[in-house]
Length: 503
Image (cartoon, rainbow, N blue to C red; front, side):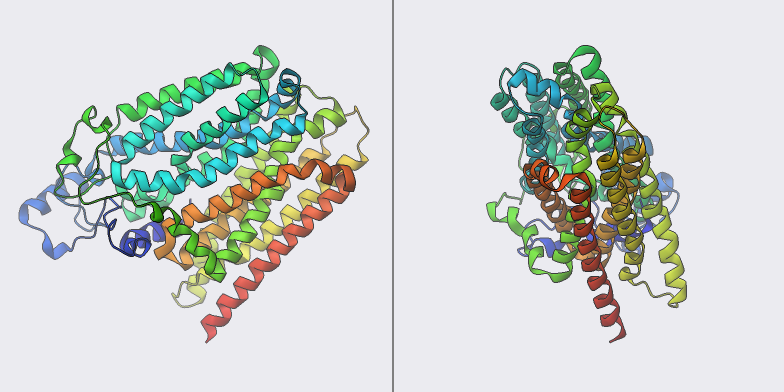
């Protein structure tokens, strides 16, 4: 997504031991640094024949089975497989939202009750990677991803046959747990397969997949609900999961340790669950990322990121069906169209936060005489905060002024602007945080999503009461105010970092 991700991945490889004080998992990345002076003539010839150069970062071994030495087509296949898996995490959790009304009738619940099916899945997507990540370091990525995907398929099939709200809630919770491994894997996975200069673009593919999945799910599934019924949402999800399971089954293991015969297993034997030598699962390792809560900068940025995610992303995903259905009388297909501005806004925001922030940082580095200051990136987050606040106010005021039963596009324009702003803030803040503490890159990738998804889980419980008591304009004002607080927190961190630089 950005050049900073290249630096992030490089640092996270070099400083991986900081995440594991006991050193028991120091080999979690497939790629380890070698010195060019260590090369034998055979090794040098291999690298030149495979990569065309020995000036590589990191420097691979001479083992063709090391993932970074795989053919480019094989590496891209595995990256696409992971990106599709990450896409389905948000696609499936948000994709059921157009069916809230239909499920409310089926299960004898309110539309707001049915929105909890999405938020319950969100919290599982946030917490699940803490456990899955440790399991993948011990037993390998391929078997964990394959069998977790199979579990997601089974729960989606079950979702299509559920008769009660409780049964459906159980399938959504389990589905979120089984989908969650892909949410915390990107950094390690990309570092295993690609060189430092390639990782920005490769991470971008994963990042865009996650972001686009959120509005794309409701957009596409609205047509499914309208024409074939909401149960087919789950069956279509199951078909996706089956195809992904097949993909993981025929893939290779990307967790690599040099001088380890497990790296040379074929695709069938690599599906067996077998513990890697010298590695063990320790329950307390699950909680290592939580230590970031004691770091002021990490805690402050996580708070700001989570608030913006909650009030400029989750609110639109889970509340659009009930608000637009109640106010304008839209059916599932018409409701699905309201997610188009979110998709457009997210793409625009990603362009600004990704390539735009790269250009901005290059300018700052030149201005500072070649010194790279991660806090300089935060300046662009203010643009995101302004867009988020403006979009929320437009959305809320236009909904309050709207004539019941007469749809108009103005609120949707507000959601598009807010979505663009939210994406800028979310991307900029997490990129800054990783740039600022690169040795904590892995823990940040687990801690921050967990916090914001937990907040995203809590918020729909009070959204309906908030809209009822404050009306749409008042609620938008409250949410805009919270985003302003998030902006102030970012500013405090920004100026603290600049002040420290001057000292």
